[in-house]
Length: 79
Image (tube, rainbow, N blue to C red; front, side, top):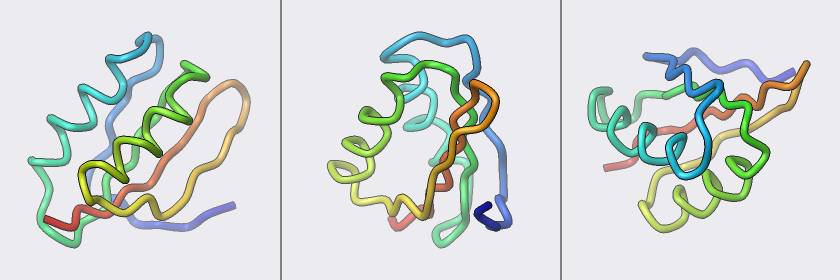
C-alpha cells in the first residue's frame, strides 16, 4: 500500500468520465506547489484519464492503487 501524505483529498467517487479529471484539474490549483493531491474515483476510465492528464499537465503521478471498487491516485503538483 502506498503511503503519501496528501494536502487535500478529492472525492470523485460516482463521477463518470471526464468529470474525475476535470475536478482533479480544478482541485490541483488549490494546493501548494510540491503538495500532494489524493484523488478517489470509481470510474475505471479514470485510470487512463488521470495518467494522461498528469503527462499533459506536467504534474507527477506518484502512485495509484485499486481497492474495493475505488481507485486512489496520488498526484504531486509540479507547477
